[in-house]
Length: 304
Image (cartoon, rainbow, N blue to C red; front, side):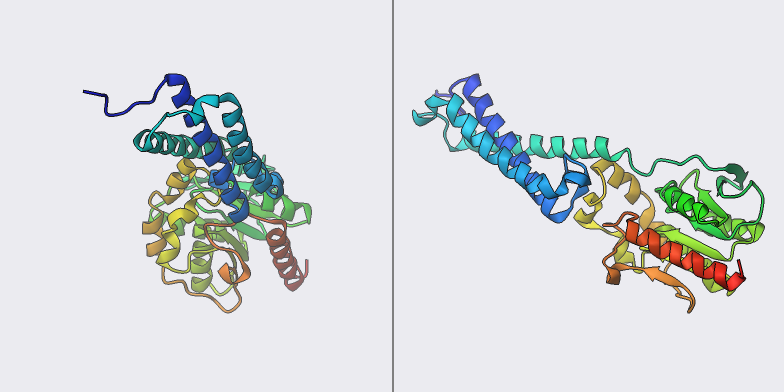
């Protein structure tokens, strides 16, 4: 009885597998480059303009190299079943390779920046920029608990402009009570009149501002509905698959607890209407400038 599958020779099978792997990797890079999917990209955003070209070169080069080294391709060889298996394996390997490289490369983002001072508060820590530990501050920054260092860069920029800034560094994913209690205690203790929040931190800032009219909230890409916490494939827009899984863990439950969002009249939301959404955004220079403008406005009101 003849074998069910006949790959002719291991060398020929490996050549086909290599063709599939390289060409599908190239196709993934074209999609990642055109749609800005960080979780599939082999290259940093600085090379995004060239990513489509690189992807096309991978596809064309893989086919050209395959036909150069495989003259036996024009003789009777692999049949449909074998080709289907090799194309499937090549696609799986290409996807695994692209997501793994994106994960390893993306781990360099949102690293902590050395603060001027730091102290513990409740179950978290407070980093101070432009002032000493325990002193009054102008601004309180509330990062997303899943990305506790995402606002350090903004804090340093604001401090360089003369503002006294406190950044809340979550030490663990909070429950509904801790998510409000930790920032509320920090705002009260350090006397901040403006709270900047990022993603879930934006929801928290809006919640605190709705309870205290003396606080102004600037919410960067908050979750305005429960659907925003169910990103689908949008989870790969900013990082690798393991980073995305970590961001999804318990997030929907906390977002649900912070909804519906009350928007105080003096608050500012940088939301999807301005091209920003909770799953496809990083702190761009434009967003940083908006935050600096809001902080400057507070200083003028306070006569600083």
